[in-house]
Length: 199
Image (cartoon, rainbow, N blue to C red; front, side):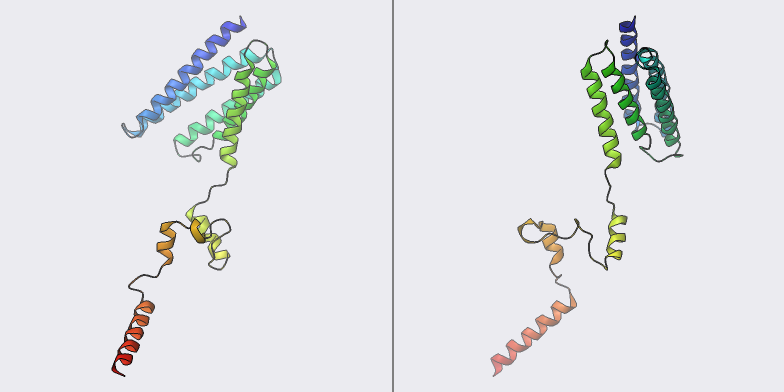
C-alpha cells in the first residue's frame, strides 16, 4: 500500500514539474495573466503533493510530517503573493528549502524509499538556503560603501594592480586625450621644444 502511494505521489510530483515548466515557457510569449494562472495551478498541485507526502510519511514521524505540511502551505501562500507583487520575488525559496529538508529527513528515516532520494532532497534544501544566504552586491551598495570609505572602493572591489588588471580597467585608469590637464602639459612641452630649437 505504501509503495502504491509512493508511485501516485511521484506521478503528481512529476505533473507539478511539468506545469511549472509550462508556466515558465509562457513568460514573454503570452500576457502575464496566463503565466500567473499556470503558476497558481502549479501551487495547487504542490498542495496536493504535500497532502500525499503527509499520508505517506505519517507512519514514519507524524510530527515532522505535520511540520512539512505547515511549511509547504506557507511556501505556496508566499509564492502566490509574489505573483501579485505582494511579496518579494524568490521569497518562498528558503521556505521550500526547509520543506525539502524535512522531506529528506523523512525519506532517510523510512524503509520504503531509496536513501539516495533523501540525500538529494537534503542537497536541494542546502542549495536553496545557500542561494538566499549568499550576499548580493549591487551598484547601490558599492556607491554607498564608497561614500562611507571617503570615495575609496570597498574591500574586495578595489581595482587590481599588475597583470591581474583587465584591459577595461587599464583603459579606464588612463587619462583621456581630451583631459584639460593632459592638453596643458602637451602645450608646455611643445613650447619648451620650440624655445630649445630657436636657441
